[in-house]
Image 1 (tube, rainbow, N blue to C red):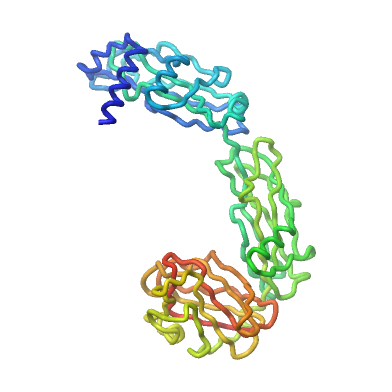
Image 2 (cartoon, rainbow, N blue to C red):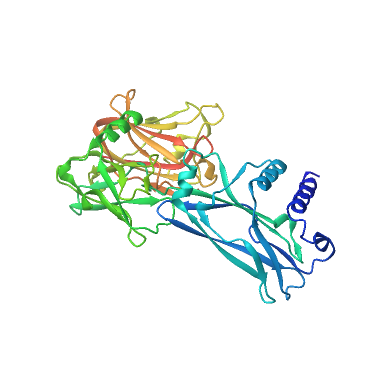
Length: 447
């Protein structure tokens, strides 16, 4: 009923502002009908680096008899007409000043072969931006309507409100937070790392993006995450082009960093990077995604680690109850059974497994197999913690990328270093789709 009433209002409004439309033909004869291909409110983004933005308006000639010549008036609503429309439909449009765009209204003629007419409009970014600055809540539009045709005009597609909005493109790091990389004591003496920069829209411009090292980012991260990553020494890395990234439609738009063994001992390091500015006044940095920590864990070779023969007595768990399976099922070599953390007691994540080692270690790696059914219990974020006494734990690493997301899959971790000798390792599941987790097998190697 509401839709029907709104339709009647639309027809009445059309009649009031275009009484020469020959509306009786609309009801009696559908042989030829005219309308905007895109009607109603149309968003039109204007990107700051562009002085002008083109926009194409299409008026369609349709119906059962398209092989005729016809014409229609394309007009701009004045303030009074638009106020009446706002009153009827509860909108709050204002007419965009004519210095903000270039467009000719008037009589549009169709010959017998024309199926549509395409009309070009040009918006000017600077005057639109000046108008909208400080008036972000005001809805400026170019309000167009069709009228005065010997043929029918579709009442539901008779009006078009083009709403330009100035958009400032922004640059960010594609990945934020801690980005994990492992650098072994053996093999190549250096590794090449790259950090992709993201652009909020498809890039059509050439400009520079500037980065710098900011140690305060690492200090804040260590405090917030409860870790103790070390600052990557100056002698151990080189940032290409002094941190300037050439952004263009053709280039890779990556920040390239070379890391060397020089100055490193076994440990977890990070290079805290900050996007500071661009060379274009019209392109800004995304302040919500302008930093990242390029992690570099310098670790012993995996072949030096020895597998721990885990026993049930070495494993404890939280919550301190089991609703399905057992920890023995984790270490029996059979992927068809499993351990499931207890979801029945209402204890939220994190849930964890804790391993009491037969001797101290300074590095370790682990491997697990996800349960053979139920992807909702597959871990999506895990943390590793170490302790000397089994009571006071420090966080060593959080891993939230590269983990399997499906059933029956194997994950093998990189080698993780502890910073000091530990005798207890806690494997903590911080996130999963279901709020609990299940694993079929778990293996552990230490140094």
